Length: 174
Image (tube, rainbow, N blue to C red; front, side, top):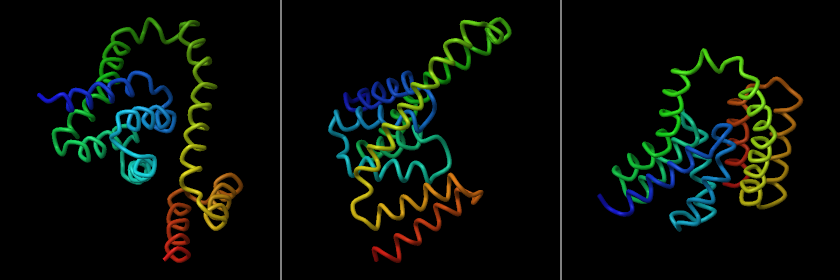
């Protein structure tokens, strides 16, 4: 087994262990790991996240699969994907065993209450990182503002908003 595959596994294992709050909260951690290892530049990272968001499944798993393939083809995809799901798999096994004992625990509820603001901070940091790279001109800013407005002030389905933003970008930037 090559050192690269081991590094991919360990990096995504780290992302899986410390990426509390789901995919969006993991984005800043994924970015740091991938760019620090030199596997992706910032622009490639933003593109990978965009693809990972558009495809079915969790962002961390999708990005692991894409990055693993880009870095080391099929074996890289397997190493990164298995790395990112290992912590969740282990945690689910442990929680399933202890669920009845901890479901009403004040300690568990306190930990979850503490993690919520941290997760919001991670998601916000990821949004700013992606925004700095993605919003490159006034037109991009207008599209971004329109999407935020539509998501916050209307009941338009997110898929329709994504399609409309994509069509706008295709018409304006083509």
